Length: 441
Ligand code: PMP
Image (cartoon, rainbow, N blue to C red; front, top):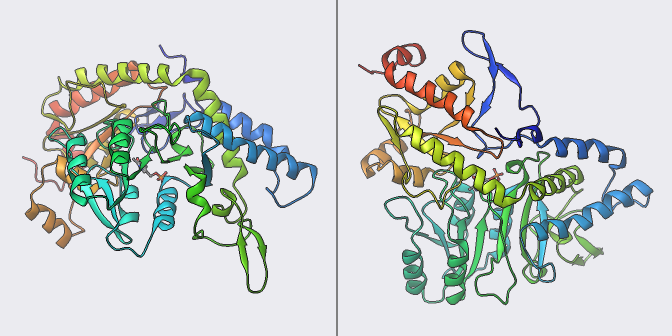
């Protein structure tokens, strides 16, 4: 059905079920990490003979590695439509490190300076701001979507004191794609900058950061390669060169300076200034190979395929007895392929185990590093939340999440639906086997 499957490593891997039968593994946990592209692993192998230190040697191999590393930045900027005259791409470990870096680099002693985050963020785009700034959160509406109305209300309320609006490009819980260009326009109207956490968006939609002369450009973008079919540990932070020129990097060491004397340090220009230590060239080789493959498929084709899959899945999930789906099931136009749900009476982690052991399906369950958003969607009361704080070892509320990659198929969805039907019709049996301590009657 889907000729993207041959692009993925290990697509036919078999895994054992609880009855020891081997079945093809089904991965519906792409929001956590995607499997590698075959092209990525091939490029890693091709490049391995040239693997050498970056900016630290004069040998031929070191020159090849350094040139590849330096040239790659323009390919990354190009991939997200960022004008290379104005922007630079800093290589880091992942999105989390990228957002921590920008929060460190933005820190001022001005206590009135406000960061406007949202109520739907991953902890990576919430916690790094909390200890350094006054943080406020843009509300979500009753479907869980970002409220631009509330964003503007809060920008007006803080009257020019909001330094940065920081929002996810797409939610890792509900899959809603945020209106980032509209949000950028509103933020700029109030003289605030905008950071987009693109960890989830990057492998599902074409992104266009633009240039500073357009009112709806994106000032900062952060993403991780491991969610775009390329492992080996690279994260990217893109922002204006001018921003990185000012101030000092938080990590200091080799590779970040022009000159050091006993009493003086003159830092390098961006982006090297923010990349202390020996760079991760293999991570960059993998990232560039993934970008090439994504470009050759076409982001619009990926979007179209994943939307079809999402619609097919939601239509079928809705038929399942006692299912609760925690996102808008009617309007799916602004969604990536993520669906959070529960089946009444079955603990989320038990349901995830059953899917794995009985059908070889990987999903994620829990609160997905976005506790406040999940608490809101599950409509937990203040009293319930307080009790979880008081008894942190007690079973946590949560959901099951399925998340698609470009290679998933409707046939795989059929396996999931069949299994969920069986589970919901035979709850007692499954609970007894997988969660005997539960008090299900
Ligand atoms: N933001 C979002 C929306 C995410 O989904 C994730 C990963 N789950 C992150 C940030 C953090 O990414 P990483 O773990 O690669 O730093």
